[in-house]
Image (cartoon, rainbow, N blue to C red):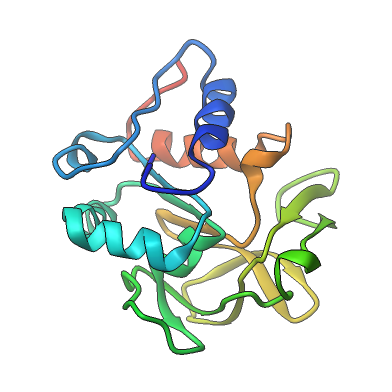
Length: 195
């Protein structure tokens, strides 16, 4: 769990619930930890702040290496912006360029326009109640991207091999289905954290 800023404690708690007694969550605030992790979560927060810390500590380069070697990565809200290949508007940082998507920051408006919505998610039974806080959206994507959920023409949940990007905050609900997908991704690469 990249723990520079944002919804770190909420993600730690959600992953703790999803893991039960199997596995543990490590908070990453410096270099040298990511290479030992079975998976990485980049939480929501403020994308420019997160990107600066990733660059300053070298953790961004470690995440690039981990992603390239197949380590599962789940990026939520600002994390989605940080791992994208392209950000529509000008920013003060370059994204990590991992997920082949084009992202629009604050796609649904400012903090005041934050909302919840029921999403029809590929592979889920009942709809997923998602919490959007000053959320981005995916406005373009490459051929290898699997769009898992949309709001209108905007993608809000996507997957590309070992990378999953969510425009919302799954850690702010009791519905652990996205955290379970992330754990399944870890198991797919041969690391069984649940059994």
